[in-house]
Length: 309
Image (cartoon, rainbow, N blue to C red; front, side, top):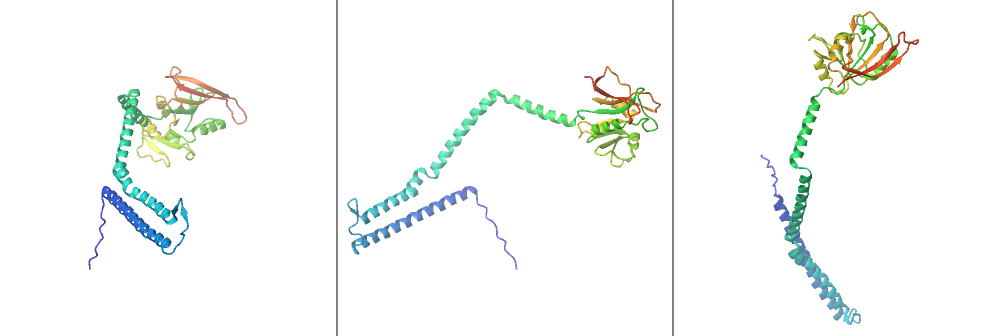
């Protein structure tokens, strides 16, 4: 046996509106007709009640029998009902409503046109479109830009020594704390040897390792083969840090905006060196001296350099 599927009939919105309007009119007319029938029956009942049974025969209102007054009031209500169904529909029905809506819409359109003319006089369309295009273009350029603030951070001796045999030649706890405070939450860019000098990944930092070895694997780090690619990888961070070693610092000088240098006061034997800072290109904007104590064998100074524009 084949089952018949019921097809849903799609009714045009205009046809539905006409149907609803017609149904409403039919119900109004039915209501008026019922009111008229009840009026006739009620009027006859009042007359019989008074004339044949003498009910309320001596009750009058303004000199007229009570049932006459009651019938006249009912006639008044019937006329109101009639006016609502016929007269109001004829003079203030669908067509009248449509005309009022058309007038209102036309008035609103005219007001909108006046406002648009005022806006165009104050802000010409060509200027607005130009500004819009400039804004869109600037947003695109901003997305393609490298991070806004690139900082190199290092600790170097008076002779620019950084370390020997992939390790530091001093122990400065306060400098370690400062390094952690400045770099936490940021991307840190480094060479392979610097990465391998860490016993484990530094917490709360994203590691980007630069190496020419295409097969190099660095668990938990991003591996790239150039400083340009490293900075692109760090683009989600607006303030990444370049943390070494010596060759990476040398390349980073052309990209960096700031240098956070801990200058350790002394000269040390080393195999890795920080590049010489050209003071014609870099301006010293902040320095803070730290003397020796029981935890720090060597005095040092925090130096902040900003690239000259």
